[in-house]
Image (cartoon, rainbow, N blue to C red; front, side, top):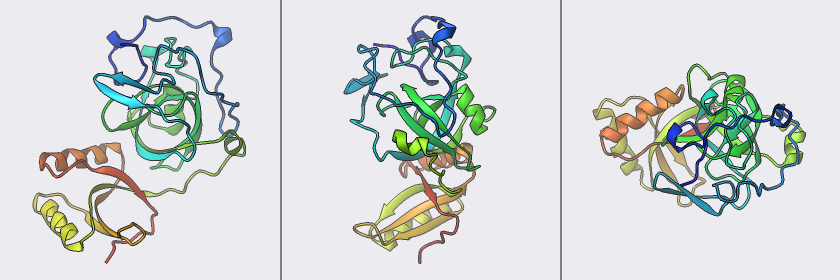
Length: 262
């Protein structure tokens, strides 16, 4: 088993500390000015850009490219414990640099990460693998998490958007502030959605709404709980729904002027 960086993997699975030469520290990437990012060939025996890799019995398939990648979910961060250790593409990890770990994007990838609660965005260089804790989509460096304002909280709801170099260099505008929900189910028949809504409410889960998505093929009635304010609130919904054995909610993001479908 090779070692990978990311806050959910224990220290015993990490390589021994190897402090970097200060002259070769990865440079911070200020928003809007990422370098050209050729696909990394470093650390060929590790999980950098192998077609797939396994961690704790789970297999992950690396994407062929990052074009069009956008995802919303929970971000975490990792810091001093891994400072100076080798990342998945062979670089020393710098906790103060604007970098991140991702399970499947090619290394390196430039990405814009937006805190959905505040609308603040940063640009990071993804050079590591992780996080491997269930429900987390990206692991930011300490420096990146500090810029997004969630070091103390530990997690935040974010949007991750892979950027082509030209787009990032142009300083593409961050997405607008939007409202987060936990989606529990989606049905072609409204009656099924209503039944799930009643079942959730009967078990004490409030703020259940139905969204009609006419653009889906076929059209769908989506059952959602929310809005949820932050990662802790989302996790609470996931836990509550899990106890009822009604599935595993996923994060969805809506424009603030959205209204329940009728």
